[in-house]
Amino acid sequence: MTHPTPVPGARSAAPSAAERAYQHLKRAILEQVYPGGLLVSEGEVAEATGVSRTPVREALLRLEAEGLVKLYPKRGALIRPVSAREIADVVEARRLVELHAAEQVWPRRAAIRGDLARWLDEMRRAHAAGDVTALMAADRAFHATVVEAAGNEILAELYHRLRDRQLRMGEASFRLSPGWAEVALTEHAGQLAALDGDDPRAWLDAVGAHIDNAATVLRTLR
Image 1 (cartoon, helix red, strand yellow):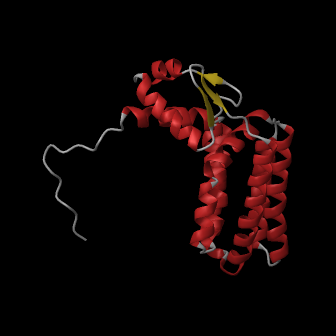
Image 2 (cartoon, rainbow, N blue to C red; image 1 turned 180 degrees about the vertical axis):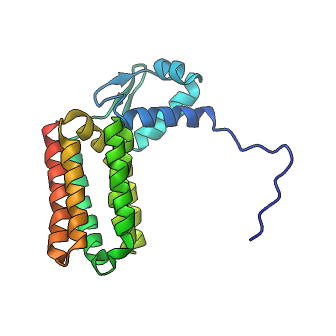
């Protein structure tokens, strides 16, 4: 395979000021640095990111369109709390997609077993290091591996659209619910054990029970 010859002196484009502000804000929201219910001002964000207020305003407009903040003129942006309805909607969508995917991958489960084991190991390392963000990312990758392996690109795309909501909710559950990380690790190990067995119902039950238990934890945090 041939590769394009680099242009002498060419550099990759640096992110714009608005993009830097957007990435800073989104990461802070998803990682619960800016918790739901907090009111942040354009000035605060501008100072934190080293940009002017105009790109901060652009970033906040993008986040408002994504449903993560609500803008109040001359006051700032309210970080939208996760609502009971949002939790219910995400759980319902996860059950529909993940259980269908789990059923579809059962006949070729050997193909994903190694990837799932590696993501579980990554979850364990992140938990041991106290890195909640890495733990949540590995947790989500574990589930996404099953969805993607099912082979339905439309459902996989739908699942990926839930990414931000899942990350935000997952961060909250791992940070605010003592012991949930250990339970989640145990349940993921149980899913792997079921995948190694010969009973597809045990596999589906393990997947469904984990989603339901995660939903229960989320509801107690509200």
